[in-house]
Image (cartoon, rainbow, N blue to C red; front, side, top):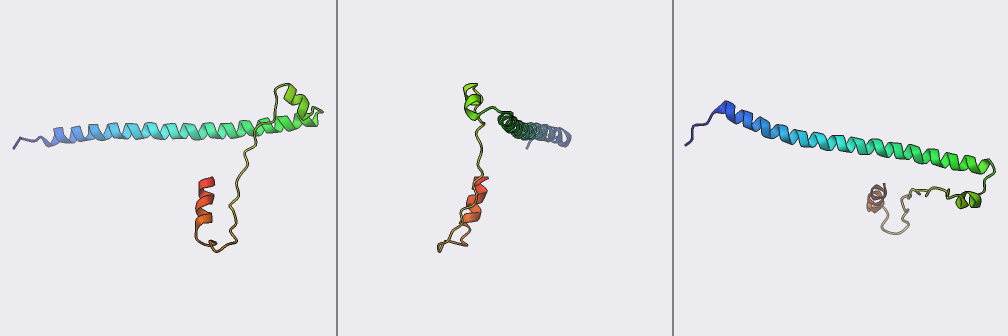
Length: 102
């Protein structure tokens, strides 16, 4: 059996763990950036919608804005959970579909 050095083995194990920690830290940073960018996109879309509404209040018609290449932004519609009236009610399918929709 080989002569093992406890300190050397511990150092090697720490190095392996450190590299694993670094990769998961990078993943967390990436996810945080995605969240920040999504928040910024939501704010920008809200500002765009307000600006479009203001332009129409200022007398621009939708057709005029469209001719200028300023069509209204695509509106994301939130899906509401479908209400079941049949015998499937209470089976948990509604809860699962509403989670999938979000």
